[in-house]
Image (cartoon, rainbow over all chains, first blue to last red; front, side, top):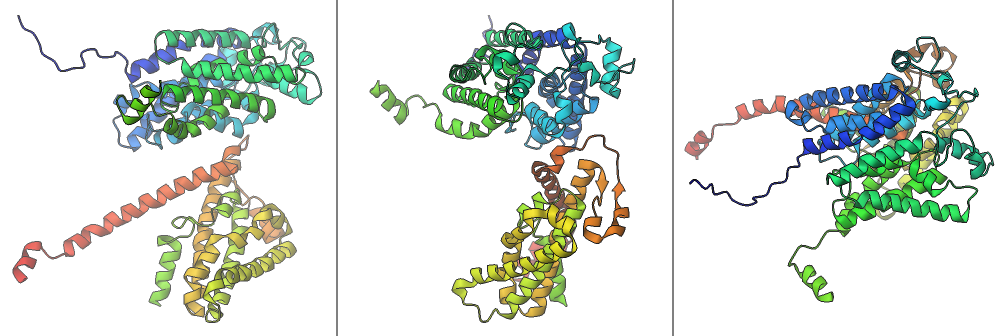
Length: 358
Length: 232
């Protein structure tokens, strides 16, 4: 009988970059389906535009950098960047918005830093912030969910709206934001912010048709769907629980304190957890293995920091949602967090001291 | 004449204040949102540099070493005030659009750097030329950056040139491409950082390409090692 003798380790993990990126991408499916249910095929069109651009620009820049193209493309990381940015863009935004954002994300935020593993900042969020500060109008015109929309749209209508700004029957993207009552409607976070500055209390503001029982029509289900996807990722051990849990609980705590102290000028904690991109950010964006903190203790601090920043920016900042800014700001602190949360290695002087203290 | 050629080479390329010394980044990033602003800033900087270099060079033997920096700052501040009043009088629109960055030329490190490193050690004429050519080197970077940001940001060139040059210059305005929406990112300071980064990268890669062209010839001129051994 032949016995092969191999050196250790004998148990090899099945995870590799390509597989992990693919699983993360697949786990966004529930969220994408929910988005499509409420906002139509525009979501899908944006995703296709963004992912195509991601792959093309990645191939181009790899050629310029004289790196192996197909090998790097196979790790799916560019696809995931395109996917995450595509989800964040309003479904009927002009096509060049997505293309510009993704190519900036891939070229400047990822490859100029040295490619996957060397980037300091989350590429998808860099692309998003670039778009948000450059084209605030296009980036904040989300249509109303289908249930209350004045115009119903076919796939061809949406395609034409993305590429020309008008549907086939000649309705402009701006008019598509009208509800059945003929009034435009911003996203729940946006409209809460505007109403609060106009002197309405938060309970008056959330009485509008943009809100339903919990956190805003459509958005609560989108967030719950992303939460489901995130739980799948946790189950598959693609991400660890530290960042999402720390981020969501610190956001919950901050909003709870704010709501208890000044209920008229704050949304409820549930509203904050289930609106905007909270769940997408907690499970899919903040957990990016390259740009997040690397030790468990560091992850807890990193996540909690993002939660606090989201609360501060949503309530006191100029923009309605804050995931992108919060994640980028927290990315900046990662080297410091990593430095101070270095796990003690087994048997070192520090480790012995720790054991003795206990 | 050789000295002047060396100064020109240093100021425009090898030791360019904007691209190599990376001095004066504050005006470089803040006011280059259009070509017109960049040209206005360039003119002001060149004028101040020539003036301060000339004055420092003339009085260099009487300046006590211990307090030379405050003296340089006083001289520069004097010239900046003159330039600021001139802009206020003859190009009021530009004066307003440059805003605080015009008086802030006082703190521009290029000017005090040249006063300290060159003018305080050299005679009048070379010092004036050094101030002029360093100013030109800085201006080129300002204008290139301004052009890139104006074209990408709002699709025009020389927008608002009439603020600087008078009414006739409004015909200089070129519409390079039609943009429905201005690209705010590139017009804000972060865009200037990114654009400057690309210019630096281009300069460095040109430099290394030039060096690799020059180097093989030097290699060929070197005597063979075997021969050296034989001679010694």
